Length: 264
Ligand code: HEC
Ligand code: HEC
Ligand code: HEC
Ligand code: HEC
Ligand code: HEC
Ligand code: HEC
Ligand code: HEC
Ligand code: HEC
Ligand code: HEC
Ligand code: HEC
Ligand code: HEC
Ligand code: HEC
Image (cartoon, rainbow, N blue to C red; front, side):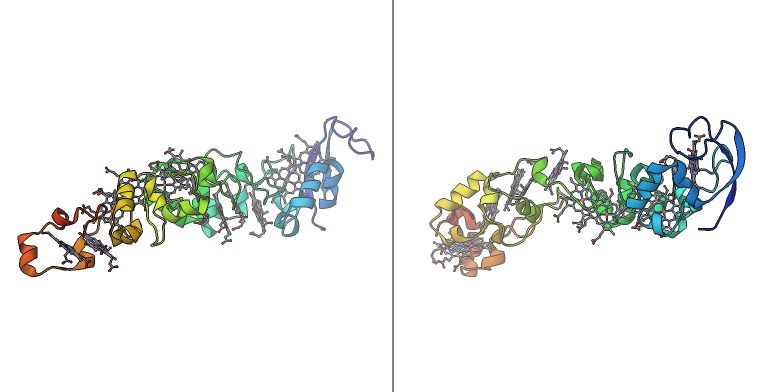
């Protein structure tokens, strides 16, 4: 790259051990630096960019970012937003870019340099961020990285919680809870009744003892879709007896013993 620029380079007793060329004395010299020159003194940075630079290796050069060199000027280190303009992408408004992206290995994202990543994550994943906000739960208070310690990966629920019954696996948890709205329990029509049993032993026991066809139904056949939803007998059975009978005896359970301990 032929672009050269003017620098006042101060090399203070630094160089002698590092490159075997001409020793440079501890005084200021006015010189032109080119991209090829950097490697003479900055081995590590060159290596980083060479191996892990990504688009910072191919789309820009050292000199596009480092437009000045110490001790001259104030722009030896560039602001990321000089090129990644905040107006163009909400992600570029989050600040503390270098807390996650090492400048010379920008895809080697590391979260250890940041205290709270949620706003940065939500800048690209607004849906998950909004879900956590719209359904307040204990998870809303956690930083995204508590569960996503590396980008694209996640911890399974059991890393932090005991299952309700010993045989539950991770996929079962997702059958009732969504990670970003865990307290809204919703499920499909096939959840096995043994998963409810851990918390509702009485109803489970009663139903198992019932001699009627209710015994063959899944809990979720009657308690559909959402936890705590209670059905009415008449939703499924309409009015099975004649009208006068129902008017006289409005409470089905008085004769039938309730949905779980059902009697004919
Ligand atoms: C002759 C050796 C030498 C060459 C060639 C050289 N540098 Fe440096 N560079 C140094 C030294 C010494 C320092 C530390 C100066 C200081 O801290 O005041 C330094 C510091 C820097 C810094 C840190 C600035 C800061 O404020 O922390 C950057 C960035 C930098 N160099 C970039 C470059 C780039 C880009 C090139 C090639 C265009 C280059 N250097 C070429 C010796 C060199
Ligand atoms: C995309 C912009 C960008 C490019 C390209 C780039 N740098 Fe840097 N460089 C930075 C930033 C930002 C820092 C400050 C890093 C920090 O402190 O976290 C930095 C820091 C440095 C430093 C100071 C020591 C350090 O690691 O903090 C040196 C030396 C340096 N760069 C040399 C180079 C050389 C040589 C090249 C070309 C091979 C280069 N840089 C390419 C942005 C860039
Ligand atoms: C001199 C301009 C310039 C500066 C300063 C700069 N970048 Fe970039 N960066 C680019 C260009 C150009 C690309 C490739 C096109 C694009 O993604 O916009 C790029 C790409 C990236 C990528 C994607 C890398 C890949 O391989 O996919 C990341 C991440 C990134 N920059 C982060 C940063 C961060 C963080 C800083 C500050 C430490 C920074 N950039 C400073 C110009 C710059
Ligand atoms: C909390 C961590 C974090 C912070 C802070 C952060 N980023 Fe990122 N950045 C990421 C993650 C994660 C990705 C996605 C990487 C991927 O897709 O593999 C990313 C991707 C990028 C990309 C790649 C382009 C793209 O759209 O995929 C660029 C450029 C970028 N960030 C620039 C910046 C700039 C500029 C800042 C500061 C204004 C910044 N980042 C702050 C974590 C962060
Ligand atoms: C610059 C934009 C950007 C940032 C910032 C970003 N991501 Fe991503 N993320 C992406 C893209 C793009 C994908 C790939 C999407 C795909 O494959 O459907 C992705 C994928 C993911 C996935 C895996 C999705 C899947 O279906 O496998 C998770 C989990 C994730 N990101 C979490 C996070 C977390 C947590 C953060 C904050 C630390 C974050 N992301 C920051 C852009 C970003
Ligand atoms: C990194 C640890 C972590 C992971 C992974 C995790 N949780 Fe949590 N979760 C917590 C903490 C901390 C709390 C609050 C204290 C508690 O109830 O244990 C919590 C609370 C909950 C609550 C109660 C919510 C409330 O507001 O009362 C539910 C339900 C829950 N988690 C389900 C899950 C499910 C399902 C998964 C997997 C998709 C999961 N958790 C993954 C840490 C985690
Ligand atoms: C309590 C743990 C926990 C927290 C906190 C958490 N996530 Fe997740 N997230 C998960 C789990 C577990 C999955 C995987 C779900 C699956 O297997 O389908 C996931 C999946 C994702 C995905 C992939 C797409 C999807 O929705 O399944 C994205 C993107 C994502 N999370 C972003 C975020 C962001 C952004 C934050 C912070 C605002 C965040 N997560 C906070 C546990 C969590
Ligand atoms: C059959 C549905 C179902 C399955 C499967 C399920 N949960 Fe739950 N979970 C619930 C219900 C219902 C609650 C109680 C909600 C309430 O109190 O209103 C709950 C509550 C929780 C709580 C809050 C603390 C507590 O014990 O009350 C955590 C944590 C939790 N579940 C984690 C998990 C994990 C981890 C898994 C997978 C191993 C899992 N759940 C599987 C339905 C389920
Ligand atoms: C983690 C424990 C847990 C699991 C698993 C669980 N529940 Fe519950 N359930 C509760 C708690 C706690 C209550 C509230 C009890 C109260 O208010 O007295 C409750 C209440 C109910 C109620 C009554 C609501 C009301 O208004 O009285 C129904 C119906 C119910 N659960 C059905 C189910 C079904 C069906 C399953 C399996 C799909 C299930 N539960 C799984 C903990 C659980
Ligand atoms: C979600 C639908 C649903 C609800 C709600 C429901 N049932 Fe049933 N019930 C059934 C089904 C399905 C059968 C079996 C019918 C068959 O196989 O012919 C049944 C059978 C019965 C039988 C006959 C049992 C047998 O072994 O022949 C009685 C009596 C009965 N239900 C009463 C009730 C009463 C009383 C309630 C309210 C406390 C109720 N049901 C609520 C679906 C339901
Ligand atoms: C045939 C439909 C049906 C089935 C199957 C069923 N329930 Fe119910 N359940 C009801 C109805 C109807 C109520 C409303 C209470 C009433 O009418 O006495 C109820 C009430 C409840 C309640 C609230 C407390 C109570 O006893 O009133 C809980 C908890 C409950 N069911 C749990 C379960 C569990 C766990 C299962 C599976 C083991 C289950 N149910 C199976 C219909 C059913
Ligand atoms: C006064 C007592 C009484 C009341 C109240 C009552 N039933 Fe019955 N029900 C019976 C008797 C006894 C039978 C069995 C005789 C028969 O098959 O006609 C029966 C039969 C049934 C059957 C048919 C069982 C089969 O094998 O076909 C259903 C379904 C039923 N009842 C549902 C209900 C519902 C729903 C209600 C409330 C709306 C209700 N019953 C109210 C006494 C009652």
